[in-house]
Image (cartoon, rainbow, N blue to C red; front, side):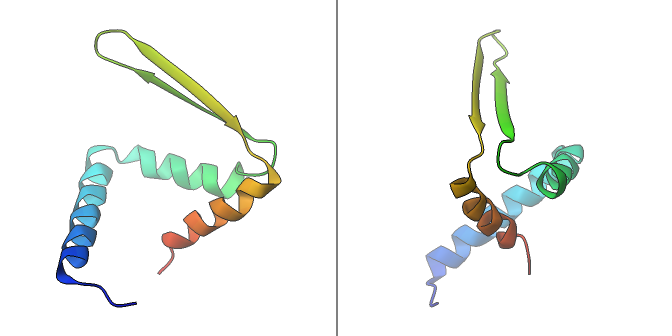
Length: 81
């Protein structure tokens, strides 16, 4: 896979952003690791709640299907060197 300079720069920006996020929120990656190792299987319900500083809330959820598991495995493999 050939990458040009702009793509390499974008990847570096993404890596820097991830590193900063991990420093700002050290428990969140640990949470994601535990969930990915123990809870992601067919039938699992993933729910996301977002509350703005103004008090507005958003909520959505998905129940994992067998088809979703291949995609999730590919995401897990992105983090593997």
